[in-house]
Length: 255
Image 1 (cartoon, helix red, strand yellow):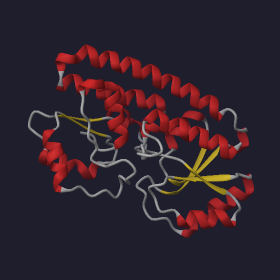
Image 2: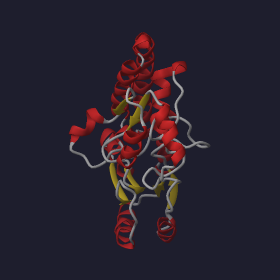
Image 3: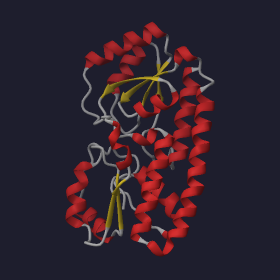
């Protein structure tokens, strides 16, 4: 059991055919506003391994996990090795190098829960690590097609700081990493930057209501493009697919 669909995808890649994974927060839902149900307690109670992100992203599910999980279940925080970065942004997976550390923690959790299949988990992890390394290279190559003065990612939700740091971008957001309510003030400030820098597009995730951003962007004659911080059912179905989609969306609208 994982808290999010993205974590479920990572577990499936490391666990392969040996795991059956359920995400508490379904694909496309906003993790910040999700409300658990009694049915979620049943899912938790059946899990041999429970995977949370940590870092403040999904702590509201801690009571559900602690109250419903079995005594012999293994519970890991996928971002635990990254929490010493002293950063308020828990979306560490936006850096593919950090996603490798997520996969390492998941591998270790699977081995603890199912030691008889250690070799399988080790092998699956190595294969996935290679894919994530390739992903990092591919993203950098796509972003290199964007001229340096346009490498400014303006988003509705503050979830892309680790992405920006990894690839040397500037990032500005309207709301915090907890997706709290946006106010008009920051919109005006960001629009001023958009006009000054000649940035042709700003970006928003589909799970949020971003009407204010859309109307302000229209007034500024800039486009609102799609970007994802978590796996979506019908649009991006895996972490790797999501990250490549984001890079291509930036390249398409900012070149």
